[in-house]
Image 1 (cartoon, rainbow, N blue to C red):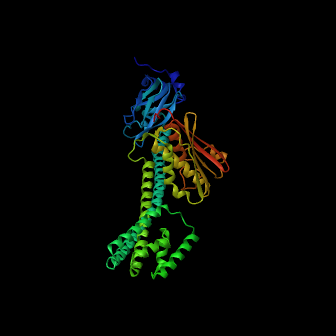
Image 2 (spheres, rainbow, N blue to C red; image 1 turned 60 degrees about the horizontal axis):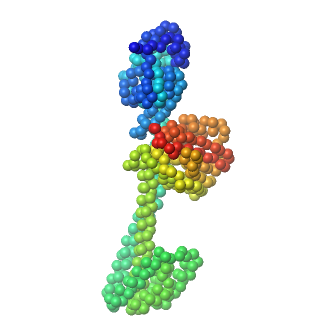
Image 3 (cartoon, rainbow, N blue to C red; image 1 turned 90 degrees about the vertical axis):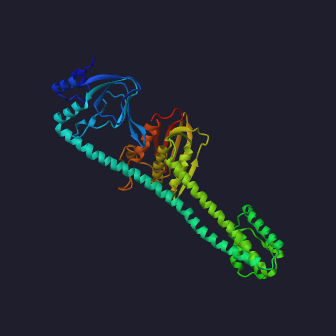
Length: 473
């Protein structure tokens, strides 16, 4: 048996409180009441938008799809809340439901067919219908354009950071490879001179053994001060000049860098004929320099690999959106991606509690939060200050705190700081969506909390994330 809602009951709902008796009677004939058990999907995104739903009792949850996952955008028990075929008044083909409506607890809805709702709004409120239509078309397009720009700005910032960070090791790789090619050519030249000279096999073996010892000993060398290096270069330069080795000033920096001293050169001189000594010293110096260049190549390759690993961690490439994670991994990858913005005037202080448990969360989305908070902190300090990244446990919640030593946030600004499109940045510098997006990810997506405390010289944003059950999404 169909349950109807009387005119007086309809008038109690804010949506219908100003309607006439005739209009209410028309709605009474066309709407009906229906109940849904807790956990039921009242409607699902993508289904034809056939009904307008008005909440009478219970708690509902509305979720939207974003990035391949569902995000809860509203959870309420407010009587009269409406959802469903809201845009049925538009003169266009029927729409589908944009999101998914669920009954969190047992719910009762008053339901009206979309066609009836659309007709009533068009006929009863023609001016409002035209205004709503304009808002739906123009406002939706504007918000999508701004949201798209926000994502592109974030992508551009991360891309610029990665490109900047990759440029140094990539350039070093090209430069070092060219230098290594020249040193290898020099090595072949010196070896050819030795093998075509009066050098016996045993003497060559001894020379190569001395070269190997010098190369292997490089890893254990203590760093020299500029003054110590200069003194040793003078010492070796004098030795090379006394033994007839021309161009010693070119070789001494290479030999000193490899830890070669006059005693090692005496061993070399004792093992080769005097006229081949310049070539023997050349083999020693060029081999040591080549090994040093190989070390530089290895360090550049390691740096590139580290950056790529940080980029993959930041974007969560090839990983499940919902996963158990260590928040420190995301914080470190975000700092790496934003390193170009830190410059030389901002000191980064890490105060990590490495004993924190892993949490089940959407890693890529949390990285977006860290990006927004760190980027805002850096902008607030205007290129000079201390950026503090701190983690700790607060009861059953994990706390990630991003602090800066900027001028602080004035109270009038602080009151609106998490509102969408609210920004104090100049035109072209911000859209006012960063903190709103962060709030939605932390609070609505993960069931946590996002707070800010601020005084001049000490502003702290705190994201509190549950350590218990996975987020409902």
